[in-house]
Each structure stands twice: as C-alpha cells, then as structure tokens.
Length: 235
Image (cartoon, rainbow, N blue to C red; front, side, top):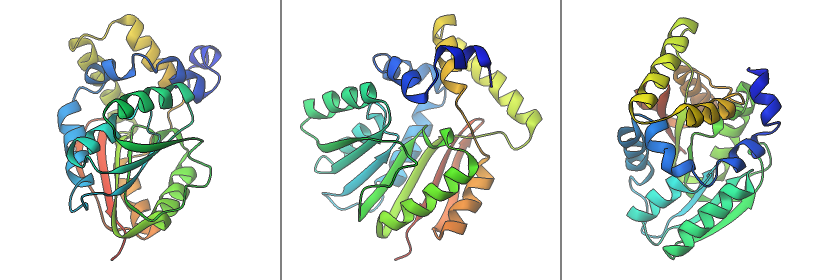
C-alpha cells in the first residue's frame, strides 16, 4: 500500500466521494475492456429476470451498473448501497432522470444487507475493497437475501494468479489506460483509490462462492485484472 496515497485519502468514502463527479466519464479509459466486461455482467444479471425484478446493487457508486440493468428491465426496482454519499447522489440524479424506481442506502458492505428476497444481486468494482474473510462473509450474506434461483453477478477487479502475473497485469492496465487517453492526473487519482484495494484471484472467489452455497459458480469472463463472477441461489 502506498502511504502517500493513504495520507491524501484516509477513508474509502473520501477517496470515492472526491471522484463522484468524474467517475463515469473515466470508466472507458480506466476499464480498457469496458464493453466486454460490463456487457457480460449485464447479460448474466438479466438472464431470466422477471419484467419487474427486485435488484440489490452492492457498492453501487454512481449507479452505472444499475442504469444498465434499467435499460433492459425498465420496471426494475433497484436498491443501491454505497458508503460514499456523493456517489449515491450521482446515482439518484441519473436514475431519477430516467424515472427508474430505486432507493439508496448509505452504508458499508460489512453492515447487514437489506432484507430480500431479491431476484438479482449485482456489484461492480466494489467488493475488492474487503479483505478475503470480508468477501467470504459477504458472499454468504448475499445468498441469504437472494430469492430461490436468483443470480449474483460480481463484475470485479481481481488479483493475478501469481505475484509475477499480478505485477504484469497492473503494468499493462496502466499502459492500456494511457493509450485510451488517461492522463497523469487521472491515473494518480485512480492509484489513490487503488491504495484501498484488497483483490483476490478469480479462482479463489469462485471457490468461496461454492463454499457459500451458490450453484453453478463460475468466472465466465476474465481479462487481466477484470473478471465477471457469477452464481445462483439454489432453486
């Protein structure tokens, strides 16, 4: 962890709150595989959903993933959780402008989840801020609020399978972000937020989903540091 970054932002809430206004505009630069990554997550999240599903978005940020869901299921009712109030304000503005039924909860992912049942629980680029035991605990709690047959989709930043590959993937991520237009200031801000990261490998997390009781847990998409993890509540 870079102590310079920690001295600038002492909490995750402060780091992400400071980025709320520009977060979405930077996504395509900072997530070089944006279309495939979010597209795969969206495809799984909406597979077999009812026309008016109840959906819980964990670490929802500006509501980007929720907005994508609403584009496919406009009658969805979304509950968005995040610990950065400025992020949730951005999400509320965007979803309200589209008349999407939603509510927001300002809380940490370690706190109790709202009662389900939910047809889908989704998350994008958030759960890697928890340590490994925190991830495993969250996966168990997610399963408990899913309706039978409901899906969990975690579009996540993951660790490389070995330290050498993790370092290589990180280097390539920065090269790709620069190639897509990220400048020094944007990359420095991203690195400041990444100081809070606790990523785990995709393989470990699939194992943890299975341990929690998810059916058909898998990683159907992976590109270097970005992966989509899925699992279903047993019917």
